[in-house]
Image (cartoon, rainbow, N blue to C red; front, side, top):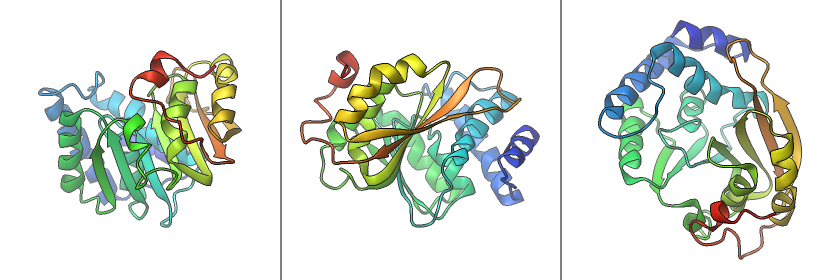
Length: 236
């Protein structure tokens, strides 16, 4: 895990041997399960360290996880970025939300394998879970990575965020036009763009940034709309 260790140091994260061992286990379980279910198209050892694990840890550039944080990872897939963050910061409470049942089986397996006692996986669509009282506007931090364009991601994520909380979206490529198109959705859903942080690290060969949205007011009850609508008809 040399690439991950050196990259993490640039984020002021000094990985312990125990944490490095957990990342090793995560990698091997991820690739083994990937032969049975489609978790990721990136399986090369070096690429997983950079494009999955280190990329997940870059969220600490805009958010320093605290033990009191209640966090949900929307559309987590194979547990990214939530699990790498919880390996390094095991004290915050993490919910991994994933719509595909087979992926949730992997998440439950890896949570137990890594001994992540403050993490739990739930199976469901964000459109449905976001309307449930147990989860609606309950989280300090909402994170998502490569889920959808910004307007759609905002509708799927902001309903989970409590007022004064933050929604952090990890994005690749140019985002100025995408965010401009999403401004109406973000405002309507109770959010306000607080920061757009460029990820300037030599480990990444492409353009990456973090979009931080502050939850300024409650999300109207009608959002998120029914399953599929946020993607089919993004708020413009």
